[in-house]
Amino acid sequence: MRASAFAAVIATAFAGGALAAPAAGAQGSSNDPAPAFYQPPAELPAMPGAFIKGESFPLVGAIPSISGAEFVTDAAGPISADAQRIMYTSIGSRGQGTAVTGTYVQPRAPWTGGGSRPLAVVAPGTQGQGDHCAPSKTMQNLANVRTDPPGVGIGYEIIQTYALLARGYAVAITDYEGLGTPGLHSYVHRESQAHAVLDLARAAAQAPGADIEPGARTVFIGYSQGGGAVAAAAELQSQYAPEVNLVGTVAGSPPADLLATLNQADGSAISGVIGYALNSMIDTYPEMGPLITPYFNDRGRAMLAATADQCMAETAVQFFRQRTSDFTVSGRSADDIVRSEPRLKEFLELQRIGRITPTTPVRILSPVNDDVVAGHQSQQLGRDWCAQGAAVDMVIDPLPPVAPGMVLNHAAPMLTGLEGNVQYLADRIAGAPAPNNCGTY
Image (cartoon, rainbow, N blue to C red; front, side, top):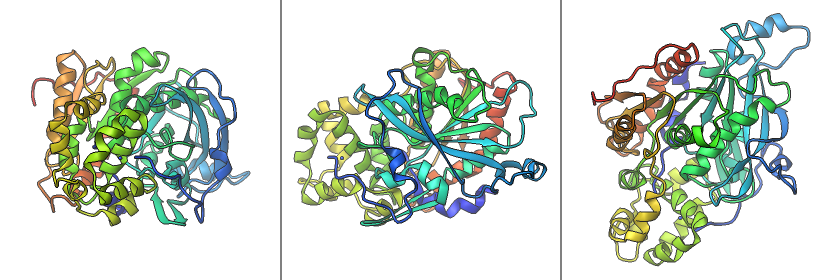
């Protein structure tokens, strides 16, 4: 499967984070897969990373399993794979035990590399905040359509999934806290997203039929929101989940500094993502609500309520190229307001990535002209880690500005950099020395 076939979808379907009050949960979808699956049991296992349940589903693009035709399916490469949605325990944004869903995909062909089959954990880019956006739903039909109110979640993470399956890895993709499952999605919350990634790495080997070992060599990969999630996971791995055998991470365009991202995303084609992050902050830190909401006018409050139940497609259409200054009483931008209000700035600083040293190698893909997640802040993340002694491979994508604000400079490097990113992870799995270009950028 060629990644370029999905380029048009990618260009408007995802973004990093920035800085919304929680709204009603999602309504039913016309093709909503397995709605009952997303309801957690009354009592959860006490330990994070515990497998709760699984359910097989047909992965979009994969050929069905044919009994007695193993020689056919084994030769079919990455499109010969079995998928299941899974539910596992994690620690949420308020420090609470919670159930998170995700997807586990395993090639039907045996692993032929050295050692046992490795695991690749994918942290998705921005999906949205409605339950119909969950990747474990959209990866079944590519587009999960909701009719009341209209909406659609697009399963673009199938691109990275197939690129990793082509290498023979088992692949696990998290839905994050609150996507599909009850509660609001904790968008760009540093610890919640890191926990969702790390606990999926713990739980994957427990999925029915999984042929990976509990200590399997593991790699993380994510872009945009997902880049921030795996970057945070790489930082927390040694203290939160030391038993996870993490050997390398690729963080593409990570929003390590939400204040810088807020300024960059404002007025872009996907500026509505600011609503997702505000919603998440207010839900996680209720004391933030009285600090933020007085700044918003009626239109701004309506934006927050709408985005809390949308996927990227409907958010991009409804709030295309709008600016946060249109949503405030004074006409000031959200960036200006946050910079002038120390308490609000402090809340954003809690999500800063780069203060903890990853103990395993990390590659950062930083598009220099990124028009959603500023390139200078992802490069600063690399410098911060380098100063702490981490092994960092900084790759700066030089794509010149193309229709600034239309998300092309943010989206395209996920596709153009994919082959190099996957090869970087393959080298880490093979045990090759990790490249380190600290001090050269």
